[in-house]
Each structure stands twice: as C-alpha cells, then as structure tokens.
Length: 472
Image 1 (cartoon, rainbow, N blue to C red):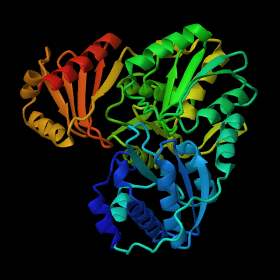
Image 2 (cartoon, rainbow, N blue to C red):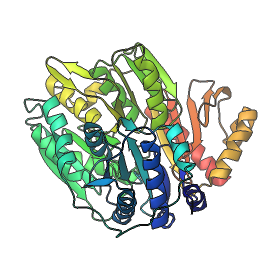
Image 3 (cartoon, helix red, strand yellow):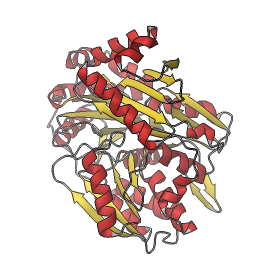
Image 4 (cartoon, one colour):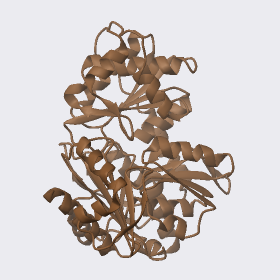
C-alpha cells in the first residue's frame, strides 16, 4: 500500500500542533506510514542517518513509539529513544545533534486520543512539510520486530543543564514552589530543575492515570486545588504543565493561575525581546503595554507563530513568540553578561515559568506584583467538548456573513462592531470587549476566548457564550 492511501484512510489529520486522532486510528500501519513519510521528506532535504524519539505518559504512547521505531529501522535509520520526557527537551537534543525527531504525544487532549509531532533538525516542521508528509507516494516498508530501543538520558540532562546554567547562583533559594505533577511527561524533571535553582519543592497531585491538563481551559477543580495548595503549603509559586511539557501553568502566591499569554508577555519583557509573533487570540495588553518594537499577529498554531518569527528575524535581532496557552518559542539567542541562551524555536514551558519566578525573587516581590503593572485587559477561555467540527464551521460561516445573527444567537448585550476572520471568528463588541470562537484543531471541540476590562467580565462573557451554544 502507498503511504498517502494509508494516511487518508486513517482519518488522522494535522491540527495546530502535530497529527492527532483517536488511539485506535494509530495502528502499526498508520504509525509506519507517518514515520516513513516524515523520514522520506527529511531525506529530500538532507542526509538522515538517525532519528530521535520521545513520548508522553499516555497508555498508548509506548506502542506507537515501538511502531515508529520499527519503521525507522526498516529504512536503515538508527533510533535514539529518549523515553518519557517533555517535547522541548526532545527538540533541544535533536537540534544539538542535527537530526530529525518524533514525539509521541496528544498534549492536553483526552487519553483516548494521541498524536505525533515531527521535528526537522532545525526545529518544528512547517505547513509545507505537513502537506509533503500527507502526499508521500512511497510504499510502506516491511517491518521487523515492533519494539523500542533502550532508553537514553542525554536529552533530559541537556534540558536540565540549559536552565541551571541560564539561571546561576540558586536564585530561588528560600522560595517554596509547588509542582503539580499529575501525569506530566516532565513531572520529575521539573522538580530537579527547580531544586537546582535553589527552590524548596513541594510535589503535589501525582497521578498514575493520565490527566489531560489544558492550560487554556483550567478546570474549576484545578482552580480550587491551586488556592488550597498555596495556602496549605505556604507557596511562593505553583507550577505545572500540560501532558507533554510544552505549555506552562503558573500560579502566584495566592494559588491564582496566571493566563498563558500574560506569562508570555512578562517573560518576553524580562528577556528584552524586541519583536514578537503571537496568535490573534492573545491579550491585546501585548501591544498596549508598549514593551515591544513590533508585534505580529498570526493564525493559531505554532507553525504560524514560527513563520511570523522568521519574518521578524529579518528585521530584528531579538525575536520570540508565544501562544495563549503559555508555550514560549525563543527564535534568537538571548545574552545576559557572558551567559547566552540559545534559541529553542518550539513551545517551551520551563523558560517562561522560571523567568517569572526568578524575576520576582530577585526583586523581592511576590509573583502577583509582576502582573499588577500591566494594562487592564483580562482574558478568559473555555471549550465545549464533543462539539462537532462541522457544526462549529457552519455556525461561524453564517456569523461571518451576518454578525447580527451572532448577536441574536448568543444573546449579546453589545452589538458587534468589527470582525476578524484570520482564525475562526474574533468579534469586537461596541463596549470594547472581544469574543473569539474557533473550532479546535486537535479534537471535536469549540473553543471560546474572551477579553474584557475586568477578569470577571471576561469569565462572564465566556460562560454566557458557551451557555448559549449549549442551549442551541
């Protein structure tokens, strides 16, 4: 069978970050097809002698990794298996070795789904690479034993060293930091990194069952846990990530989770970033704060942010990007004295979280003080699960043509005065509030983002919108 036939028949598609689908769709044949197509595309761009493979803690991930390993070996490509680790740690190691990489992860989506992320030797694949993978005409190879290679620790140690060296002198000494471990790929590594920076770490909430933590849609239970843990353990900060460790979730000393785009904004400001590429869904405080020479808005998804960063790098020396989920992409080196932080052009959870904790510690301030000086624009987001993508697209297509229909359907008190269709439907209301709807690129979900002049206003707008859609 040809690869493109196997991939089309699988029903799996590329979303905003990698190929995603139901676990049962990722058969040995489909994993072989994706791996073969990816390595074929990479061989068209240069020599490929070996590939790095990593995975998250989903029950289905080891089997998928074994299938990808068998496919690579059938092509004569050596496999370096780095086991369970954060996606940015795998990408960092692969870039250092100049090899492509495959990460088995569904990120934050439920455990009955999974996915595969692909990395070129210089970082994430592009949208053009995705198309080339899906259209590869080669035949599926005959596989040998479907099993993994022995695990290596080099990637985890390199990632640890990156931040232990960038933040020298134990800057978090005497700080109490909770680490919500759940089933995150980097749950033990996160503890090691924080301890290397001097923090007194309090591990919390470890789970051997997969927990789909979404940093853009924090559950009420996790909000309550954050407040309770901060008070019980007298924490200065509370940190966790999504399943594959590329999206941070950081709470202040009160246990209040900070929005990902606010964490990204503050990190970029601390690093003296000149130009930013960010998705259209991010908080407009990024522009209003006046900290950056240029801000380029993109479609949602790391490939689009990367493309925007590449454009900005032609004009500015210090370029970065981040997403509303908090994942931070460093596009150019950052220099501080004699220390230099090399680029990592993929979503990273540790850099923004550590940067904010260290900045607060050095100033003798609580984390909440870093946020206090920002412009008064607040965002909230949530999602409707099991909301068919076809239905989402039909609704948004109707409302693009008639914004008054959107106002009536959602019972909005304010009229829609402007519509941005760069990605989904982003409507500005006459009072200045913003309501943004888009189908998820990873699952049958409808995502809702809101921005208002108060945190409560943003939360109410999201709840009102999603409540109206549930009643529809």
